[in-house]
Image (tube, rainbow, N blue to C red):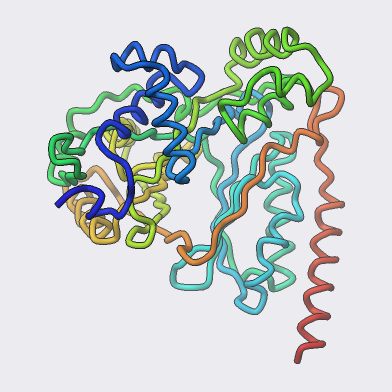
Length: 381
């Protein structure tokens, strides 16, 4: 059975190797990719452009929020189904959201990702408590996380000759046992959250978030600046101050119609096992994102895999619990029927070298949205 028949996706082994090289060298280094693969630049660009046109490939940028003074908050909510259709609006009343999407669990659910100025982190809990007091949500879990480590696609667990994925679950416990205990910087608890950026840096980062291949000339035109000035900020500020984690090579490997996207929160007995597990997962095709819950031996794992492999994944995690690598875990399934919403960093809220966080405004917006929805529900009843 060919991969295309198995997954109903139109890519081949060479496409996959190009995607792997994008993760290795980044989408702004086509020359290096071509040299590495022994192909022409035009061939590489054609493959990339075709995959992007088919909406199988997205080239984005992950910001290292720690170095711009923002702390990542991951929220899982049990929402009141009465307000399910407007839950995105309520959560987005706070300017500092990055991503919101419905989840399936025991109750109607949703998960949201926020990056909060470090001086105002307690106010996110206040915002969520206000949602709870209005009965918009019944309960929530808030985790403060490291920045996310994006796992770009590799050919690990892929049979190049037969062009199909080979999920070798039996190897995962052995890979964990053999893995090292040095975490990448993205998964280490930060010592502080410095602000190492200015307004121009944030505008550039915002544009790169949307498209990692955007030209400096395009950004310069939007800002009314010279390309040389943008290039200076990129090299001397963004790169030198590590404001970018990495480039996100988002690749739709599996047919979405027969796949699931679970989010796992995994509690691990000790730090050594956490590091080993994180390192073992960093090249696996079912992993999209890894994060570490701050000051705890807990991993956040966002996965994407065919549904028939999801149950094998659960069996494997249970086996790893038997071996002592995992203490317990819970998971939430991201909604297949309802797309999430995302936005870039709220760069307009950065003024005079600091982040402006208007808690009273966000609470006021929340109450206004609640009034609007309540009135509509009364009118419709």
